[in-house]
Length: 322
Image 1 (spheres, rainbow, N blue to C red):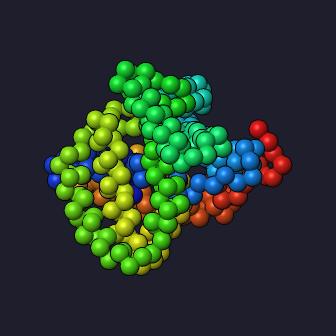
Image 2 (image 1 turned 90 degrees about the horizontal axis):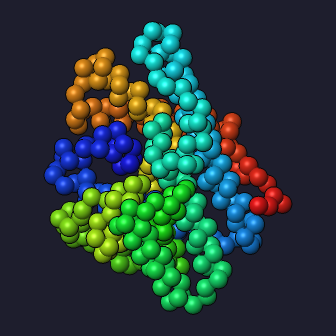
Image 3 (image 1 turned 135 degrees about the horizontal axis):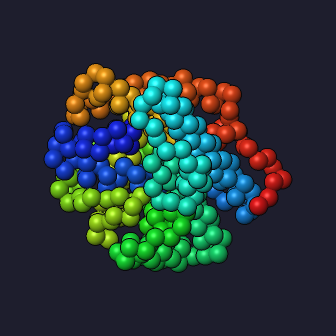
């Protein structure tokens, strides 16, 4: 939900408090990698692991690309019929997400490519490196390589450079699950206090962080601040009760990630051009609320009738190999 709000208006959180966006940016996207690391498993070998990641990440990626391009075709047709200013119709946009870092039609889809490579890289490390200290050491080394690529403005294809930088967030989730830190304990009542204390340095020390375009703060801030924020946030949330609506959106966050631009872009245009709303808190909250309401039936539609395209059922069944 924080990511959807940010995409609707990059300055939204700064309307509420100066520097708040940088503070949230410090852990907002790293948490996605962290949660994925919690659910990491080796499964039954490389072929089975790859099949599952293709099913759960790459197949939805391709489907969301097709959906976004279909939306682009619809906009092209509507503009043509209405006599409005035309937009370019270029079928190279279908494969552009595999070759370009920025895809204007649906920008957030880059994350799925990066997450796929993070899984593959960490799987290889798990299979080849057995001592825990060596595994962590190689993870740090790879993150340094990714950081240096960013400093020297070197971009690797298919978001590989971003994946190297993001790898420690993923490993943090895997490590905390392995250590049992995420299980209930008698210390959970102190989580809220820890979160409040951690938010102070997060707010005042955070710099702008953009993993998509590899715009990174100092190396220690890149990891120390997100690690602190994620650890404290999960600690504070452990004793909270089950919240059905939040959990529903969380369970199907992959669908929201891949489809929310299809809703908020036209909604924002209507609010600005037809309703005369100005960029600000009211516009963002209005578009956000409408977007999340529209996501609810879309989630039902996709998981009910297209489960193999949205990681609810395997697209490639057992026995398929890469």
